[in-house]
Amino acid sequence: MIIVMASRAKDDIARVVAKIKELGYQAHLIEGVERTVIGAVGDERTKATLLEAMESMHGVESVMPILKPYKLASREMKPEYTVIKVNGVQIGGGAFCVMAGPCSVESREQIIESAHVVKSGGGQMLRGGAYKPRTSPYSFQGMEEEGLKLLKEAREATGLPVVTEVMTPEQVKIVESYADMLQVGARNMQNFGLLKAVGKARKPVFLKRGMMSTISELLMSAEYIMSEGNREVILCERGIRTFETETRNTCDIAAVPVLKKLTHLPVFLDPSHATGHWDLVEPIARAAVAAGADGLMIEVHPRPVEALSDGGQSLKPERFKNLMDNLKPLVELMGKRI
Ligand code: PEP
Ligand code: MN
Image (tube, rainbow, N blue to C red; front, side):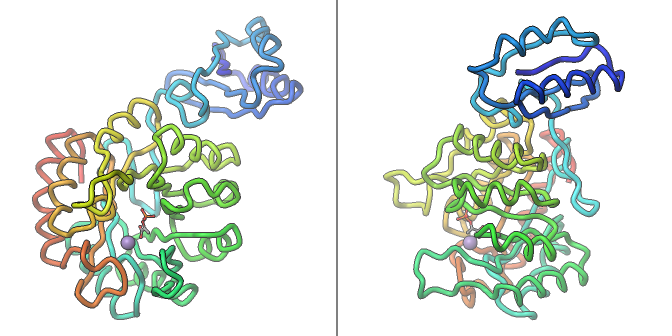
């Protein structure tokens, strides 16, 4: 249920929050520019009428059910788009953000060089995996904590905030201590223990769509994170599995406007994993901008032929720079700034 407050008085809000908790629901306060709403989140079947009766409480304007299965992530709960700030970088709210870097952190030289390429090309954040979710246990698994330390060095060298993947609940603490943003990968989108753990973390979460997940399931995964208290979630379309084999995945470009309609959370697209081929990255990046995405995640490597993972879809430095230059006017045409 959404309880829309007519009053912004602290004691009215406190009474409503106390009543919600007394009925056995979680209370989530959302103070928008125009109004304050309080979400009562829990099983609505049991005490819906008691929640509805709260309309008679002092300071309450109306009580409305949230019809979608996801509550905190829905635009019904929060009509204003969420804006997230990561060490001075704005995500959402008209800012266009490009997170770029190699698939994996491979060495000090490689990640520092990549960070400079991203920075000089005009990217806002550095990506790079230290814990890698590889299909084969015999493939490179990532540099783990050593990789996290190198990411921190790369941030210090360039000022770019860092996003990196966390694969298990046990890893959250260590990854959080180095990274500015926690990535939950496609393969872990429904790892509910991990979602709960990053929901308790103090860093924003970059949540990638599972390769066999619906948009609604992606939003339910965001709901898991948000219901643990972390409201800073960024959603990312990265392609889904279909019968098509020309591309690594099938990019669901429509997911961008659909998500913008259904949720207030920022929406990104990853054209690298969505296509699997470096030469398809730019056209799909352009399509994402045109579809209304708030940003992109792109794989860039100083020497893609030497990459330990995903070299075939990684852009060379000059191609990244070109892509950024070409995107700029399109981003501005869409009313955003980069
Ligand atoms: C990645 O970003 O490196 C990655 C593994 O992506 P995904 O989880 O989308 O496959
Ligand atoms: Mn990759």
